Length: 126
Image 1 (cartoon, rainbow, N blue to C red):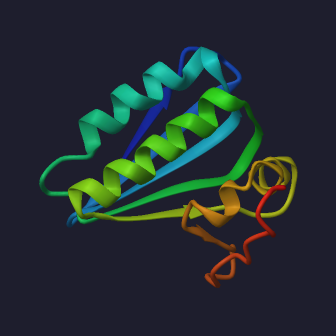
Image 2: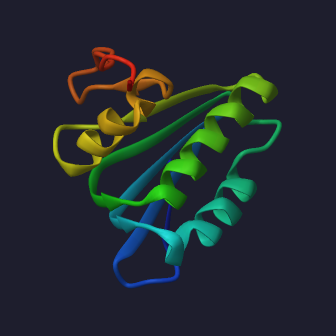
């Protein structure tokens, strides 16, 4: 796989992308917030093309995500549904998972546990 290191507007946010044979993996590190979402979206625009059949976004090393990061993930989910490519989000336990659970996005985004099992969704928010 081809590996790229992309720094996303802030020293606190880093993205590593790997691409091969129609599959792209995006790994996020640090904090995914307003300071880096534009660069994230630009990088995704570069790697998501007609050749992409599978996109995985790996949040396991992410320590923080704000509403702009959540909105970017939701937009990516909608893009995948519209463009017909497979989209999966890897997410372990911790702060980011708690935010996804509290916002109800764990029931919307296609989350997968580090073991490869589908992550259980929380009850819908009241």
